[in-house]
Length: 418
Length: 166
Image (tube, rainbow over all chains, first blue to last red; front, top):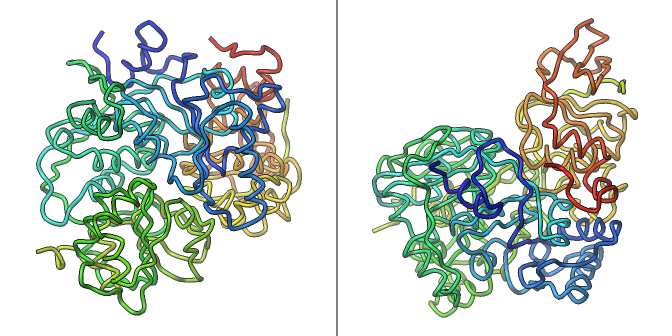
């Protein structure tokens, strides 16, 4: 039987062919928790008398959502994660290390893996051809202790990408456009599989941006076949031996195929308060912006920072618009420092922060005021997301964000790209 | 088992940020306190005025967003008998089963705020006593029935020491 990528990875784990809709109990290769979901998972394991890690080297506890801790309650929550890591030998990712999904793709996830994480954007590692999905604390806690989980084999929605991006258009514009087309529940319970010449041509960074937002269409994961770019990424992060080539079979059955011609896309934004509330930047131009936030697991990689820095070099933020730049990991931070990007941001009037999730999830480091408007490169703009239900969040690419920081209103980045 | 209560009506796309807002992130290790803010940004009166057994009744894609299991936990802890919606986001749905909160996919369009409802989980029916109507819902997948009837995933593991689903 010809299999989709999701079916193939699950089949390899359970040792037989699988069909969409069937329930399997499967081994998991990587498990991850973060500081928002981790304490509850560990509490469940205590209740079960299962305080252990089946595979400590591939069990990672990330302190990223409240890093460094802004409150004593969170400091205490962090202590529980450190204590579990010390007891079981699980990996602790400290406050300095960065956002879980960026660290997972840099250091832990590999093609063919099944990865479960107690964070919805765990789908990011799908770009490495790993079946990588978000679950709740209890599911992941049990996965940590037993090395197993249950899954419904998903149907797969194929996203066939043709054409090349025009000037000022990026992977973020494509994924916002896709979610606008199919809706925030357009792929509920499904896997997305990104295929076609456009997907093949994408950098790993672009693939991570697409896979990261699969959950914003309701999907379990967002997969890419592995190829030379995947191999190069793993090599670059000292993990060449983790590579294997994986792709769907010819003739695999997809529930649906959506084709996107990248060359037809415009810079795109999501308007408040849902991700599928998309429009082209041209339809939003002039909207006043109080804060611009560049970072997150969606768009906080070195390539994203280069795009933003190219626009911000020699420019200054608008006096009435704050600019926050947050590299996604310590690795990205160091590279951005080496390349002089952090200085460009600082010279443009940005606050450059250490890596973390705080502003995006409304925990600390960029909470909006009543009726304030933020343009952010993150993946979500739900009411209350950035810590204030009275505020308004727009989503866009790093280029759109950088251009808008200069003008103080939502701006087409092509005005600033030579 | 018959669950009885009144409907609290919500719209489409109620996200986990509505249910368990990020600004209360520090209360995630204090669920009774977090539950006082459940759904606060969608209806500021819900947490303080709902009665034990009342139902959350919503539109499409309820629970979209984050994986925070705290969301269904605090709906349950606040005393809600079940959540009914046109459709649910995947992680929220799975989390609800894991924590023992019944989640029903039904056509909620005819239910109004304050309607008196009776849910029969075994029969798969919701009787709207106020409007004298009966709605049916598709049974849960057998795996989820198993976990829910064991009282959630932790109790399933207490009972079997392992997954006992296939």
